[in-house]
Length: 300
Image (cartoon, rainbow, N blue to C red):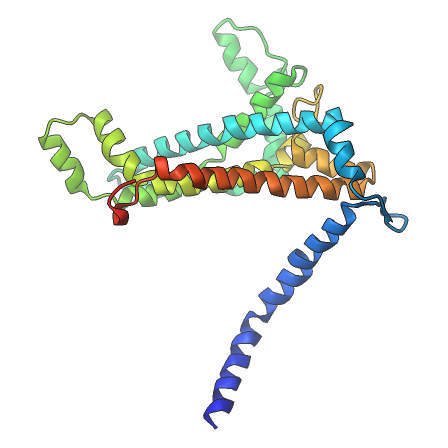
């Protein structure tokens, strides 16, 4: 009787989690294995896949300069955009970590860009802001600086894309804010009694105690940055221009898959991206022992 009750209880639990299991199998695990198979084939969506072995990977690494350009652009985007976003998020979080009657409204306002930042509408707005007669060129014109051709210079267009990434700092800011709330005020008071100035308090108290949160935000934002697609697609109108300046990895993958119908090649690109993200995440975890402070372990 008891065994039947346990079995019934287990079946009830499985029934509750079945939507997730079915969704994970149907939309994540099985498609992953299918894409792995397709990465070793020549598949154009209109004919049966033809096995070609490692040809797609060989072409990717030795016979496709556009692929390496997308890797370079993406790495610049990640290595510049992620640190700037985290620095800006921490700066705003420290400002909002004050007692104010309107602090709740301010937090909501600063979080809004992260909710709508990846939308097509915001990407179009950003394109208009940086147009030849947009707000940005008007502002820099007040300082006697000539108009910047944001859509004619590959370096300027990438800066425009990175600035949009930095603007979407809301989620990291809220996580930093939660971490700041957990730092005991007594620690700052004790440091103040010892004569510590605000800058020293920041580097000796705030940063070490926030370092686990910095690691978490860095990993999550790095993964997100590697998968950025909508802003690059909308701002460059799907072309990745000018001169490949905004050709992020995900955009080039999309073009290979759905514009050139090279689904096998795109699948190979997707797996290389997965490996690259895994390597970056692994490096962050490996180096974290040198700069992440865990209070429960008594140090770094």
